[in-house]
Image (tube, rainbow, N blue to C red; front, top):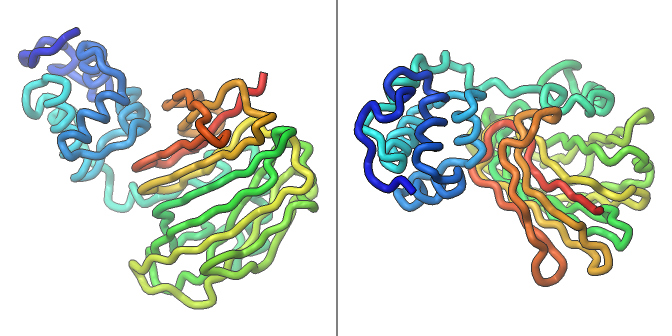
Length: 311
């Protein structure tokens, strides 16, 4: 395995670019997986999501913030490159405000199109961006599975931060497996909120619902709330994914299986969009108590969750 610091120009793309190809060749030359590179960066006090490294390497995204420059400089050290050899290949930064744009749910998940039309029923201005005044900071989802491999219950705890003053609630969009009877799915508000309006799709297994805070948040204020979905008539699940529309600090997903129905494989995945192949794909192994967990740190825009393979 290559261990020593490389001299400038050893990898031709590091001299000529573009950034994505230079990074990819340097990673291949170093012989480390992205998860190992991320661990080396963490040892240097630099935190970055594995999905972000994958996006950069494949040219799907580009380092574009001052913090990204710190990550790239740390990458140069980990990969044994000369200082600034990657930094000079980054090129123009994003235009002001460009990084703040949130893709719509249907841009990320085309199969949700029919469900997402329900959002206009809960909006004062049809077509307006949902939850526009809030950033999702941290989420913990805990799923309880049945002996038939169905999701019986989803308990979610969310921490949000107000981007602007006045945010007084959050709209949740839930899409289930085809064949699930959404009329039998019930919503229960737990801490920090109460249930508002609920709308169910008649043409797809989807629903949207309001969780109301009963007060407006001040700009920059954080708020924690929790809710539970109980699915009385779901079908066997092949996955559970959360859609991330802006950078999220942390996401923890836990699945509790019935000991008589543990999948043949569980895979932690991150995708840029629903129809694309995963940029992160890691096997998970159920531990004591027939449960499995996936922890995601510093998630970028995309879809994160666990795929279930039963046979």
